[in-house]
Length: 471
Image 1 (spheres, rainbow, N blue to C red):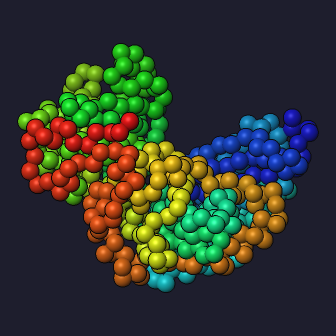
Image 2 (image 1 turned 120 degrees about the horizontal axis):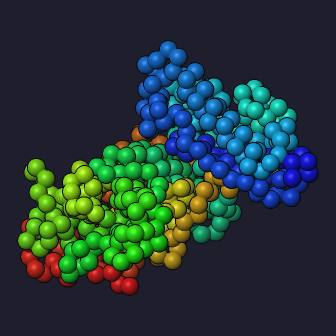
């Protein structure tokens, strides 16, 4: 294979948590291999602002941040080439997309201005350099880093706009990349607005008592019976639900190790739909109804999994603190979305696309139950995978697409959530499940919502019949 392939390219999406790469045959457009790796910058901070703070507080911080980014990408390039059994000298083009801090730190630009008002970019243009200038092991390659949109909205968002056809759509499209720093795009061919919201790492399992990344053994799907309040769940790497007799044997190797982002979203959604949690996010004292609700200092928690040996070491519990962490993250995301909708004098989009590794795993129903996204016809909500990576592949294969993305970013209207007076008001309204004020007619058609969403008391038998799924 190596002898026949001498015109190869790599499209890379440098995410704050994960770096994803695709090796393509530039002659045919065929994807030869795809791979991903953890961004080594995580050791300097889970979220982007922590990494900016690291640079500000350490004299060699900028150099360390740059070195970790380049080392991560360099190793990924080598892995892609080795898996495809070709040569590093066969790589002729590498295209990059990423959020502004990934963009700046990788290219060696100062990231500090991105951490303080007015969040100025070092450059608003695309950057083209030989790969060797970026310390990459591809001696014959040139590189192209797509332009960022604004100080908090990066080249990855621009690539997603390109990949999802937002700029040519007649329908009002909401495109959301749910991650540590959520990027939000709303609009169509007539007008596109973009913003970012600092959601933090809760959606990826951080800040959650038994949270973890989406690996084998992590709980990813959850249901709570409306009569017994007993939970069932699925874990990554096992095809059976936990109430299936085959489940115990199937998870002997991986175990049940924690709960990942999609799982925490579903269990919180189920707690709300079953009446065990109020719309304000309070886990209610329903100990008379189920042993799964336990006292936890001055609050209450839900025991999701007791462990095969029924001991505390193996127990997985969803705490009030966990709920609050998700509330804060989802309110930040929703407030950013609502801000864009207000700027366009709209209350809801015509279609919603959930992008990114995490966004692709979210059940659209539970995203709407929690109020992560506005009410919309469920069949108009879909996951689109790594839309930024798809856009990067288009940039790799076409110079016309590069011209197009450079034009697109000039026409996108940037909304800075940090300076918008309405953001805090929208944030407070978005703290409730699904939302304090927004109507949810489409959601009501799909699932039976609790009768009293702001109940301050619990323990009544009537709550047993709240929130049945309309399956």
